[in-house]
Amino acid sequence: MSGVRVALVTGGNKGIGLAIVRALCKQFKGDVYLTARNTKLGEEAVQELKEKEGLSPLFHQLDINDLNSIRSLRDFLKDKYGGLDVLINNAGIAFKVADTTPFSIQAEVTLRTNFFATLDVCHELLPLIKPHGRVVNVSSMVSPRALAQCSREFQERFRSDTITEEELVKLMEKFVEDAKNGVHQEKGWANTAYGISKIGVTVLSRIQARKLKETRKGDGIILNACCPGWVRTDMAGPNAPKTPDEGAETPVYLALLPESVDSPHGELVSEKNVLAW
Image (cartoon, rainbow, N blue to C red):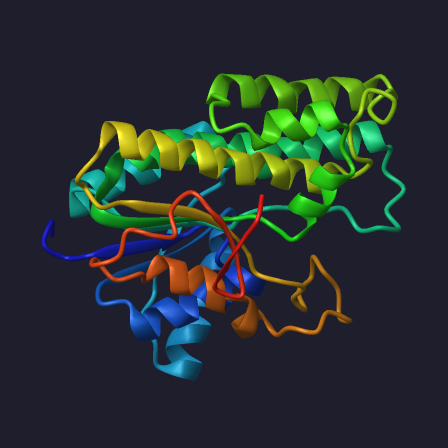
């Protein structure tokens, strides 16, 4: 089936992820995979889109915190499609503001999923991206806000055009360590685990885009980070102004950029516009 195009959304069984799957089913010419950690919930979401909306998503289990799960998906895509055309890294978590879990634990758990697990998915799936493929890493408006609350030294490092993936990983590990020791603020970090995790996603996207330009020049692959906006989901709560379908607009726009364009690439995009980083 290497002639069939394929798109995949992580964390696709609810919220923005489900809305992205819905939009791709309507606009993407090819197979669309909804992935979820929980097979039952994922299959129910697929069934609902089929029965209520007449759409045809497919399901594959994926727990981004489980390397074996990621590799199983990688092998499936390689065997069935010979690669991947569109990858949207949407899966993520956030503790509620009122959550009483100690900050040290919030930092470790949030970074483990939002940054380190997303990094694992990229390591396994980016090599599968076909020429003219599109990759979208779902970040957040909280990332530039959190960056502004970090020390000048951290801001310079996170904005650097030469920062490496290894350096970024060390910085993310340092934040978790400082949070565990209760010294993250005095060391210059913003007081938000979610915000730091999304700084990681945004900077990772900049690094990955740069690497793609170097290693796969001429393949026309485009990779960006995006902010869906404040969306009414389980994660963001009922007071957010946007519906999930509205939140899906920018990620889907980036996923479906025509072959003829080469930008935006390596940017943070909100409301279809590039944000200054």
